[in-house]
Image 1 (cartoon, each protein chain N blue to C red):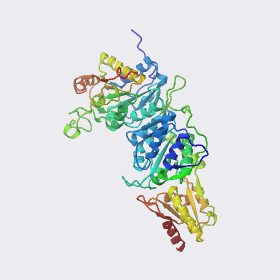
Image 2 (cartoon, rainbow over the protein chains, first blue to last red; image 1 turned 60 degrees about the vertical axis):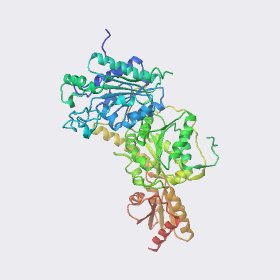
Image 3 (cartoon, chains in turn green, red; image 1 turned 90 degrees about the horizontal axis):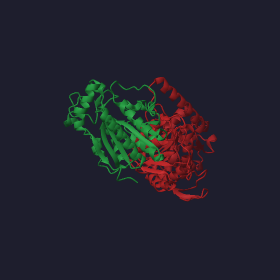
Image 4 (cartoon, one colour; image 1 turned 90 degrees about the vertical axis):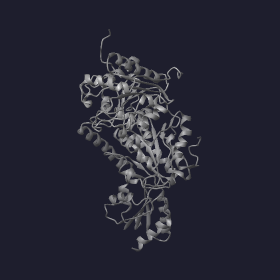
Length: 249
Length: 359
């Protein structure tokens, strides 16, 4: 059993995340992949607007903060000027699937050689738990106080399914961070995304189903249960697109 | 394009500007089609791939300006261009660029507004460029060419100023200047074939050789944000002191009326002023080249002996505010303008000058 240590790509600082929040796990997985591949010096991360906005203080690589939803465009600008560097964005559901839909879809359609870590917790965490594009039907939030009504609020956006129809997308996988096994799978998926980028195969997105105990108003343990029992049926796990073999140069 | 440095050639304003940007070292262009600036994008699309540069047609103006943010943030020289409605879309990104102190050049080939307005030339984005280019406490230098030659010269200057003071810089031209052809030549160093190192502060990967760089405009502590803005305003002060530029006619000393106009309108106004001078009227033209910083001191000097000032613009009167501020309302300031995409005729301006003489 190897020593369980903080990855080098994650700085030794206190994060601002709420107790039970899964951002910490996902940060760690990204940092472990950066360590494993030995690419910290060649990596530029793009932080979104939302709970993970301050991650520029947490990752050890160069970081850039983007305006709300524009991370894929910002990452495009970095990557085009630095095609041999690794560029990842780390975005929440409001950032990626609402205000940043156009930037996301077109970065994907262009086959932009970047990796997106998409954290889906079905709510806007930073602003206090409003309805997100991924909020489940019936889910109560600050702005859907009677539950998300699909007649008036429409339906959740299934990002991996939608993006996997685009030819520019080389890899799309949905994972969760609910137990050791799924955390290991999530790490493999993130590694796969970075490998696809390393091989210049195109756009990769790893959607990570995660929890927000604070805004869901339940304990971290119950939040994990909800993730498994309510989110996974609506957002099935798995690989939606894998062109890494076909596209290999 | 093989153009001898000293050779005078006939070029369209938009294309001359694009070539000047490339020669100034711009390696990456991100844009979106909109009339009357599309020739810039088309020129970049032809030219940049041939020098290992980047041309990318974005999904929107918002996408384009955020690509500029990412590209500039990684320490590379880059630009975008658009026309009025597209500049409105870029407002968010320009504010972030200013907030993160990133150099880049933004071109606005103005058309008439508000709304979809018209594709004809206009100067109705003066307030937007000099007052409200994005949210927050910020300014950006704004250069206003009046000829195709100046489209070239001021673009070169824009990249220099952007890098020197770490700020976005705007070229504020109009559809007339963008579309017209004039003889011009390129001068100065041609950097189009050169690969330059990224700026040291850029987020391009620390390579395990330096501390990590963060490109950011977020300051959660008010004192920290205030300190950052104070530092930025010190740079703005330097820009005001060193970069404000204007062109003034030789007869300002004896002129009773000073006509103030910029860009395309300055050329119409020049024709009107010449006619008035031919008729023996004591009139002279003052043309701001930088709109922010507004050449306040130069204008004051030019108006030392003037009895009145006439401001003429292709708008309902926007720069006229800066003229009044610069002159501290000590001299009466009148206005004549056409809007909606109409370029004023020299005779219209001449008539206004004559009315002022009679009164």
